[in-house]
Image (cartoon, rainbow, N blue to C red; front, top):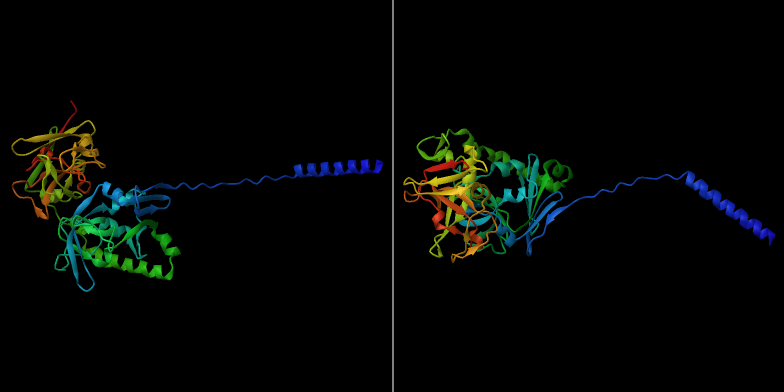
Amino acid sequence: MKRKIIWLGLSVLMVAAMLLASCGTTTTTPTTTTTTTTTSTVAAGPTVLTVSKGNQVKTYSLADLQALPSVSGNGGSKGKGGTITGPYTYQGVALMDLLNAVGGISQGQSVTLTSSDNYTTTLTYDVITNNSFNFYDTTGNPITPQTKPTLAMVYSQNGTALDSTHGPVELGFISAQSILTDGSMWAKMVVNISIASTAATTTTASTTAAVTTTTTSTTVTTTTTTTAAVVITTTPVATTPVILTVVNGGTSKTFSMAQLQQITPTFAQSGFVKGGAVGSIDQYVGVALKDLLAVVGGFTASNSVTVADPTGYSKTFTYAMIVNGTGFTVLDNTGATVSSPQPVVPFLAYTKNGAALDTTNGPLYLGFISNVALNQYTQSSLWIKNVVTITIIAAQ
């Protein structure tokens, strides 16, 4: 019994010594936890398109896309064998708007569009921002467009949703003119758009991907000299005849048609409600009032603007209406007031259905873009024909 007690005591001492030794030599290794934040939105309905840049991800249902500011106009393609398709009337969302929603594209980056059959199309920064493509008239002859077509993700053709062989979403080119582009650039059934660094793509690409990248570079090299962007920046702009005067206090700025056409064009499919019914839906090209006033300068949140025709008939709009597109009454096709899912855009049109405005409406016509796809319009009383003067009004 005495031996057991002695042995138990020694055991306790040994355990205590081991614990003390352990405490004296403990090393704490710091741990670093890296948290990756992913920003994403979830589509309201079945997802038809995903757009991403790194951890920025946005998903869209068809209804989501139709609720965004839309672009509409004409487009068509020329196949390798010279086969002409179209032109047709398309509506969709500008590709740049979708890219900007996830952070935008900058120099040195590229965009890859992947279709549901895994076919991919890669566009460089230069191609997207400078519209470096081949353009043709409806007979297939090369042309330089008067205004640059808009790269868009289209969701309707001739007023009808795209069929399963092209949609629900397709990369296309929308213009007020009847312009064709190379058929190889119309990417069908697009389901994914991703922005990536060009350098990163080169480093990780497989042999097949490298060939694809080389082909894209060759296309850019052979087409950049024929783009509309080059023409716009090198051709002298006629300053007469004057068709619009913008007045701000004691100063004024005048514009010829050529000068207005140098401002970023706005493409619109639009119409208005009069007498409880919708008038004709037409294709317009013009300049958004907010873009025009940005060029003029001096238009601030304390100002409003008055738009007038030669007889003195006019309408006045607040800064919020012009810049933010808020404060308008939006109607459906029966004249009932509805909520608009997107801002209304006031614009000065200079072409209608591909032709210059006639003397009844033009040369400039004040119109409004709401959302024809969702059956939303503005009142006809807001539209002004033969606009000649815009006056910036100081706060009272």
